[in-house]
Each structure stands twice: as C-alpha cells, then as structure tokens.
Image (tube, rainbow, N blue to C red; front, side, top):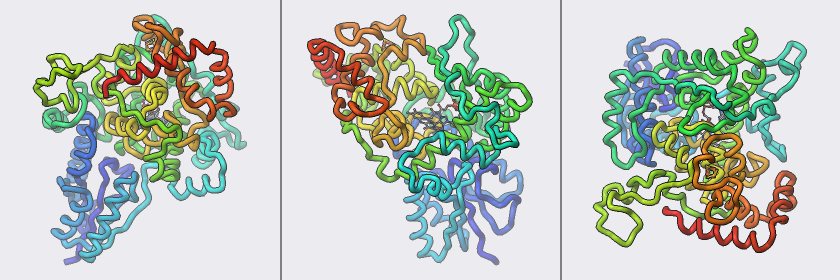
Length: 534
Ligand code: FAD
Ligand code: SF4
C-alpha cells in the first residue's frame, strides 16, 4: 500500500479558499486539523476567540468529510507532536503544510521537521494562500528602503491586482486615497445599526457551553455570533456591502458608547480565521463601486484597509521579527493596569479563586478592585470583554493611546490584544500594537506615536459629557487622564521629539505651559500612575 500524504491545515485556514489541500478528495491524502493544548493554554484567550476557532475547524472538517475527503481533527499536546504521532499511526510518507503565518508556528514546524526527520517523513511547506503578497514579494519591496510607508506599498498592490484602476493606469476617481473625507463623528440622533449576528448552531452551542467553563480564560461566550462556516461568512460580507459599505468611509473614526461595531465590517475575525479570502472581499467592494452602489471614498477607504494595511502589517511583521516582540523604543516598563482585564473592578486573575481573607489590599468583599472611572476606556474594554472585539479607533485612540501615554511595556499590551480579540494573531496584532499604537519600534511602521489628549475622544465620541473628568483640563481633581498624561508624556520624551518633523509642534505647545503648572501636571501624572491597580 502507498504511504499517504498528510495535508496539515492550520487553525486559521478554515476554508478551501485558503487551505493548502488538493482541490478534490484523493485516496492517498489525509487532511489533518489539530487542536493544540500548548497553544490553547499559552495565554488567557478570550472565550469567544476559542469558540470561533474551534467551531470553524469543526465545521470545516465536517464539510470536507461530506465532500469525500479523509479527515482527522484531533487534540494534541502541540502541533509538532500531533503531526509526528499521526504520521507514525498512518505510516505517512510526507506532510504538506503552509509556511508559518506567525513565529510560534514557525518554531512548531521546525520542531515537527526534526521529529519527522527521525521518522523518515518529509515536511513540505507551501506559500500562505491567505494573503495577496508573498513574504518574498514584500521583502523585495522593502529591501533598500529607508522608510516603509503603507501608502506606497498599497499603490503597488492596487496596480498588481488591478483594483480601483482605470485602463490608463490612473487610480479610479482620480485620487489614490480619500482618507481626508473620512473623519466624521457619529451624527447626533442618528440610529445606530444593530451589530451583525449569526445564530450559533448546535455544534457552536455545545462548544460555547464547554468553553464557558474553562478556567484561566477571559470574557464571556454569551454574545457569540460570528460566522463559523463559509456560507455564513459570505452572507456576512454581502450584508456589509449592501447595508454599510456606502457609509463606511465617513464614519470610520467615530466612537459611540456601548457600540463595538458601528458601520465597521467585523470581517477581520472572519478573514483571519480563513473563512473568506481577502481578494474576494476587495473585489466585492470594488464591484459595489463600479455598479454605482457605493461612492469611491467608501470603497477606496475599505479596500485600503485590506489590500493596504492588512498586507503591509503582515509584511512588516516578518521584516521586524523576532525583535518586534521586545521592541521598546520609548523605554516603557509599566505593567498593564488591572482595568484592562477587569474594567468594573470585577475579580480577575489572582483574585479569581481567592476567598479574600487578606484585608490589607484594596479589594472589597466581592473580590472587586477599583472600577475604571474613565468612561471611554472602561466602555471600550467592556466591549472587548463581552464581545471579543471593538473597532479600530477604540483600539488605537483609546486603549493604545492610554497605555502609551501611561508608559505600559508594549510587550504586555501586545499580549492583552493578542489574547483578548477574536481577530488577533501575532502577525497582525504585534505590528499594530508595537508599531502603530505604542511606537515601540521607534517609527519603522508609523511615522509618529498615536497619542492625543481627551479632546480627540471628545470630538469623535459621546463619552465625555457623562464622564467625571473634563477632557479640557490637564491638571486638578477633574483633569482628564488622557489630557494630563499627554503633556506628561511629551515632557518625558521632550528630547526625542523636539526635532521630530511630526511632533515638534506639539513640543512647542508643551513649552508654552507655565512651569508651575507643568510641575503640577507631572506630579499628578506620577500619582495617577502609582495609584493604578495592576
Ligand atoms: P474594518 O474597519 O471593517 O476594516 C476592514 C478590514 O481591514 C478589517 O477587517 C481588517 O482585515 C483590515 N484592517 C483594517 N485596519 C487594519 C490594520 N491596521 N491592520 C491589519 N488589518 C487591518 N486587526 C486584526 O485583524 N487583528 C488584530 O489583532 C488587530 N489588532 C490591532 C491592535 C491595535 C492596537 C490596533 C490599533 C489595530 C489592530 N487591528 C487588528 C487593526 C484593526 O483595528 C482591525 O483590523 C479592525 O478594527 C477590525 O475590525 P473590522 O473587521 O470591523 O474592520
Ligand atoms: Fe475619556 Fe477623558 Fe472624555 Fe472621560 S473626559 S470620557 S476619560 S476622554
């Protein structure tokens, strides 16, 4: 009998549009999907993220089985050990897998290679089908450049895939980028769209019940409603294009209390787990523009996120790894405030299972620690805790901004984003957190740190009116922590930014603050920092 080939499908390759498997069932190929215990316990993963991945894998395995493939979906101590064991049991001759999408998988595949070599099994790696530029292509684009700017890469990708291009080689509508039109707050009185929701089927409900009981994980499973099948993923995309894409651009930066989705697509969780291919999403948005259904600003703004940012971040991840994991150009060393796990002061981590007999700490008799009084921050973290996601501006200008101003170690913040979001994988969260949000990479990805006072949050959102702090005040009892920490941040990093082309003006504004007030701001910022529970 011929020795079979194993086709290993990573947990983020949950459809035939990205998985490296034969296009039709073959007698000599066994498709292998693995639930790795090591991976599943490596961080306090959000329970909805675990449900999404586990359910998408189950549904994909079932769909392949129905289509005639031989499939093994199994639990294993690690990917490497799982592959070695199944290779031994089946007498496999070789394993075909996709090149690693992130660093941990690269290490697993290296370990698998060594184990398999000893068993006389070949490991063959194929390019990752879930992206629109190969790693080599990006490396070629990046080589020799002094500056990596997403905009230039994005224009090359538009040309390469002929997206939003006219026959004369000019961009559709005459401009490459319509971002300037996309900066509006949510209009007063306008109804908010209900977040999309797919009713969980029996398989998903069973997984939700299982995962709900797992200790050491974060968040609740209750509101889970993401697609876990290709059919539901395609329907989600269609609904987004019809109902929201037309207005996606203008309100892209809006923030609203209790709203984790607004007019965003929530497609990242779906694309990143492999249920949709990025090209089909981009082409669907372009078609809506060509058919006159949506304006160019919205189509271009959305397409830039996927063809531009998503590809650029993945390329930069591989350019900057492994150093990106520990990059910390601003020398930020504070641990993450406890609020990020427990915005309402609820029990978490070390208080999770305790009986609260220690009366020297600041917990009350329910195990609760301090509640976060910053309306915008607490709300954005609750959204993540309860839904496993929130939109871009909450991530960047609320959560990332606050942690950067405070001086939180980017690696700690990165682990929170990685664990807490249903769309988070290291290849995308790390460049966003350490590159874009915290400037830990010193400017390789973003030209300046994304920091702002509370005035930005006041302009784009609706939290400030009911907050106990005042976004305009930078010192005193009611000073907004964003505003106070912003000036403290600039003062701490004055030397670094005084001649920076995009930060120098802010330093000049800092220099206009009277000395006694700056001393007060800095004293209060230190007290605020020291008073935070970790
Ligand atoms: P939409 O606003 O509808 O955008 C459409 C799509 O564009 C997204 O689905 C996504 O695939 C892509 N996209 C947009 N911006 C980016 C970006 N900066 N990087 C990569 N892709 C982008 N995105 C993730 O997919 N996973 C993460 O773990 C992640 N972590 C982030 C952490 C921080 C601190 C920041 C500032 C951003 C992060 N992002 C991450 C990028 C972005 O916030 C999310 O992709 C977006 O909010 C997902 O929601 P959506 O699908 O509704 O996006
Ligand atoms: Fe957030 Fe400051 Fe506004 Fe309060 S006042 S909601 S802390 S920006």
